[in-house]
Length: 198
Image (cartoon, rainbow, N blue to C red):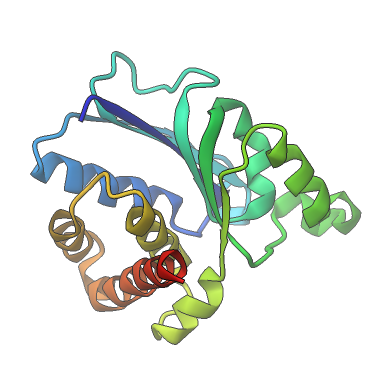
């Protein structure tokens, strides 16, 4: 792999950083150079959280604006804060469920409509995928594992890392919840494979 850059975003407590740890551990086990950058916000109070995962040859852990290959966002409204990093026609993966963050809880009217968000995204890319991650996580028996569902969906469509190395990484990170996280990952993976085959 020459290079693949991913921006992660979401709200504090959703497991954004767990995704970066899983991707990094899997990349390392495959001998792929990896750099991480964590730009956390008000993580304990539902504030915005973002991070960068750079796979392959990269000088800095920070992704330059307009250069990311993909955005994985656990909350659709948080895409707005990181979309400037996405390259033209890069991929965006997000969950269909909407969760109010710290500021929109205080001012619910400030939460943008889904149509407004989609209009913003369409200016940058047509490669936009909304996954029913909450429902798939519930189906997997772990409603909190939306992050692993989205990771599974992304890697099901964009096989930049092998499922063997990802499986080992999920098993090694947050061991008490490894079984639930693996179940959620495979739900997302299977969902995308089924959608592509349809």
